[in-house]
Amino acid sequence: MVTLRSLPPESPEASDAPQLEIRRQSDNALTLYLSGPWLLREAVPSVTLVKEALEAGGRVRRILIDAGGVTGWDTALPVFLRAVVALAAEGGAHIDGSRLDEGVRKLLQLAAAVPPRQAATPRARPGLRIRTGEAAIRAWKRTAAFVVFLGEVVLSVGALLSGRAAYRPVDFGLVLQETGPRALGIVSLISFLVGLILAFVGAIQLARFGAQIYIADLVGLAMAREMGPMMAGIVMAGRTGAAFAAQLGTMQVNQEIDALKTLGISPVEFLVLPRIMALVLMMPLLTLYADLVGIGGGLTVSVSLFDLTLPQYWQETVAALTLTQFVIGLGKSVVYGAIVAVAGCAAGIRASGSASAVGEAATQCPRSLTLRTRPRDAGSSRPPVPTRCMFRLTG
Image 1 (cartoon, rainbow, N blue to C red):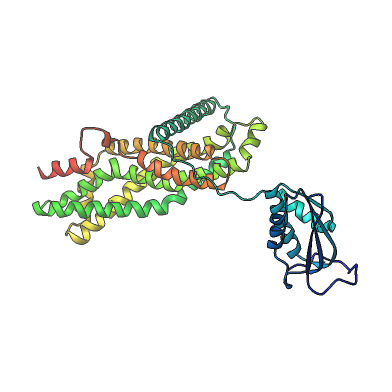
Image 2: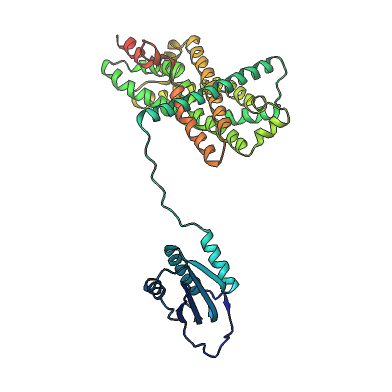
């Protein structure tokens, strides 16, 4: 309870309890005389008395409220008067509050200025055709925006080849360090586990024919051609691609990219191009490193579980692998690096509006890139390398 103002008594008839006197005038007017302390702790008269007075006689056109005898009031008085105003509105009567305290009149005006809250009408779910059309429009807009972004990337690469690209070498060096040496830990772990799994699963079948020696062929070919570049691409999609999207998305939300445009600097050349170059250059090195670590994982399983010696495993791996196998895998890694860098930067550039848009871009980027960085053999009629190797080795 908050006491807004206390008024001194103006007549000796003022009592210690709130009083309400209703008088009907001859000109279809009703006068309400309020006196005493109108406080929440007191027994305030009910508005029902006013309602009965309005229904007792003929139609009331004007209600005069005289609060000159009120000795003190708090929120109890505005609540009562608000109910009286509602009754007057129902009966079409005019309220005359000229004899009310200034503070009470302001509270009533404030209450009347705020409309009553209406329940939100549930929006009907659009039909299948509307949802399909909206999804198609969104897909078309995203595709068009990506094509425009890809065209800007191509132009920036042309500017790089002609020596006119506007980027800082120090930024390129920082991104190169972030996408290369700092990614060795996670790449080592994933590649070693993949080599272990390939060797163990393949050895179970090869042991039935007494061909454990060919575990080296299986692991070496699979890692060099498929699993090395694919696992490196997936790891960099979740690590570096999401980082690119979050970094550029934050700059977009903070209007830093707009500032670059205002200065006449191309955001694609200044921000995107160093990231694409760094990832394209580092992906073949990471893939080669992943190949060697995966072969080491296969070596661990073969030597510890299937009685192969280190020289035997090494000789069989060297005999099975050729330079062509490594070139195929490294070529795929370059493509995967370009896909991860372009898609991650595009997701960050498109982010706008709020921090949630940045989080959405960083979340969607790895999910979409994982589906794109897949082995090229998946789209051909030939089975993947591990399957072909198994059939070739077992006859």
